[in-house]
Length: 146
Image 1 (cartoon, rainbow, N blue to C red):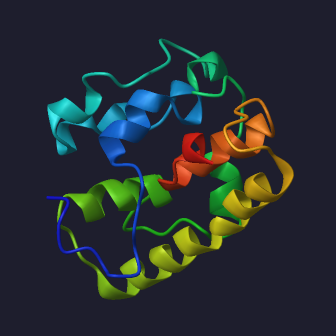
Image 2 (cartoon, rainbow, N blue to C red; image 1 turned 180 degrees about the horizontal axis):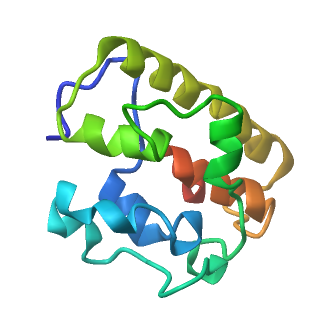
């Protein structure tokens, strides 16, 4: 678990860290917890009922609904909840070469958001671009370091 990653994939956050930070307004993957280690969910921030974006680290909504991603054709049958589900399974050791290549390519494309934060914000100014800063951890980048 957490080993043998593609050399191009250098995630900054583990699934456990992402869940503890607060992502997806607390509504993500609550129905498949049994698939992953209990330790990942020990400090996870889950909404009790409806989405609660105050649970997100930057207290803002930076998500589009999964239905939007499905309509765009960005969600594949192997991981019906999208990129984060792929990442969780990848972290657990599952490998599907074509799927992994596609998802890593998508992950690498998110660096444009980290570059935008670097360009437009003073280092350490966590109040600058909060929505973009919240979106970055959804992809295992740690925007608190920028």
